[in-house]
Length: 471
Ligand SMILES: NC(=O)c1ccc[n+]([C@@H]2O[C@H](COP(=O)([O-])OP(=O)(O)OC[C@H]3O[C@@H](n4cnc5c(N)ncnc54)[C@H](O)[C@@H]3O)[C@@H](O)[C@H]2O)c1
Image (cartoon, rainbow, N blue to C red; front, side, top):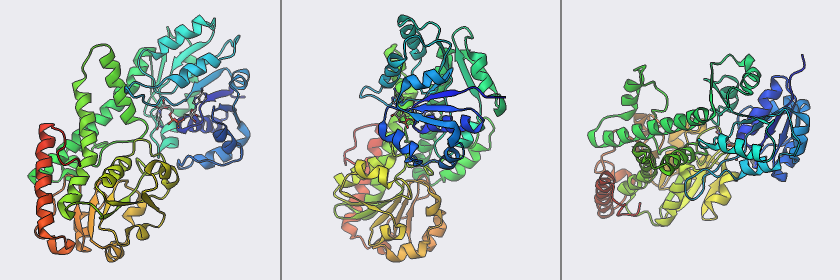
């Protein structure tokens, strides 16, 4: 049986995964983007997005995929169109919906019998606003549905084809059965709702996960002062089925193109209607401070960071992606530069994307061991598999000072320390500054002032005051 042709607006992470996956399920798919470079790249068989398996899936289904700059071509060829355009944050924290409005404006007059399916993450109320604009344009026959996407970069294809749930929001049920039918083969629970509820499910899910991360990071910070080990605490918590083990990994905080913007947008949605979402404010603030705590750990051991060489191990916001949007590495690099440090960055796939954002002052290193040569400290920012395989003895031998700050709790502290490193994780028993002094060869005068500064910093963070050390 011939499968229904599908249109996709937006050839980014979500759009391409949606397009390639539906093509793999047997649909012919027309993908439109407004970026000529992106369309040209796709037509030539290249892909600048790094997502495991996506390149291969596109290649395998190339005969069922068409790429275009022309919106009209999509609506002419297909009766169901997934909207996968970006909805980045604005300065106010609200979602920028200009790509959505552009799309509604560009809908060719006279389009009929089409279902417009919103996969982009949009604030609650957007569907109703789109419906009103469509009606105002005389496009009452276009059906609107909300179908939020829950995939995560790095595992996007698996997530798309094995979803935890499929949410279909509709106005009085219009189009819901048709959207639902597209996923029939995927064997996932389907939740049919109204449009605002579907929109809120997406925001609430991301906000909850972000809050869970900030929660475990706060527990980690308390662990550091109480000599408990957050990795074991998290394991013990996660065994409780009411809590579950996921998103309980303490680290430098969440980043990426979704959590920061979606949490901010939900805060604004609440605020715009006069509600002060206190829990979200706290989750956001904890996340911001968490990245900066690394700086105080470096100062604790190295003293002032001026002219110290610090290597950031990992730039992407998470492993298995080259997405650097809102990555912790960007904040950490900027803070290190502001402290006068020399900054190097290593990443297996994200350097090209990161270079222009990090700027010329950050030295980009393709070779992992080379990035550590002569460094005063290495900071794990992204938990790439390549790092787990790092030969610690070799790394120790090439560094000027054997200091490893593990922002993702990737390494086993005992193993790292056995290789002669001074190791600091997140929420794990800290190295005793006095006992490691000879290992790092940092003058005591500097270390102690740094230690005092770090202690003051901790106090300030707890009190929620501005950071006095500027770290
Ligand atoms: N990336 C994720 O992990 C993820 C997961 C779930 C949901 N989402 C949501 O999905 C949406 C897309 O995210 P993304 O990461 O794929 O974004 P992206 O920035 O990677 O891609 C968006 C694409 O849309 C294109 N575009 C802009 N205006 C357009 C228009 N009028 N017509 C056609 N194309 C247009 C852009 O050029 C860009 O290529 C966002 O709302 C995001 O919050 C993202």
